Length: 69
Image (cartoon, rainbow, N blue to C red; front, side, top):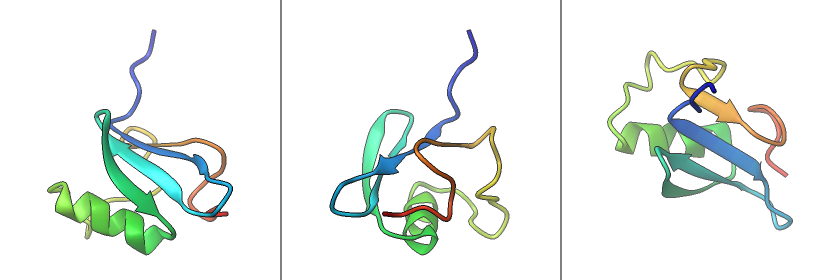
């Protein structure tokens, strides 16, 4: 069975925003790609080289990086 990528962006909540986890740890609720990149930066990732389309790093559930509500 394949392992999940370390970053999971969960489906949009009914009130907007998406929960973000890294290796099972909840980082917070992102309301945009900018919020997500800030969470990744705080987690020690180099956001200058991170691609939001990197399927080895990020698993998008319930829509891609353009779905926030």
